[in-house]
Amino acid sequence: MADTSGTEWPAGASADSDTVMGLLAEHVPLALLADLAAPGGPVSQEILESEGLPDDAWWEAADDAPSTGGASS
Image (cartoon, rainbow, N blue to C red; front, side, top):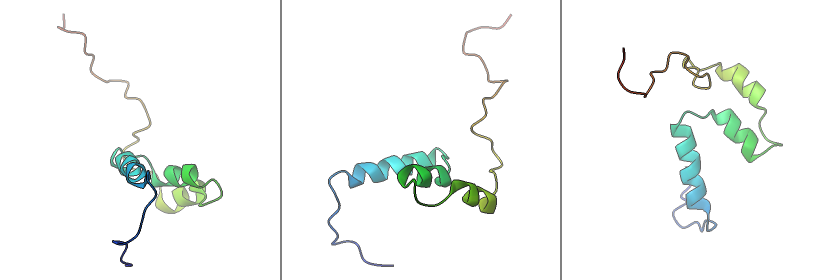
């Protein structure tokens, strides 16, 4: 791996990096981030076909989510 310790990064690079890492931590697919970052870059459909769907369908709303409204009857 190349040594980037002396590299000068653009002013917002750290914030951008933190944003991307936060999205990855929230399980946003890397394929989606790649498409958003470089529309002419990797094709997410090809990435999805090679990686497959995740076991946890995080994008689907849970129908049985617990309510936060108070006591039950």
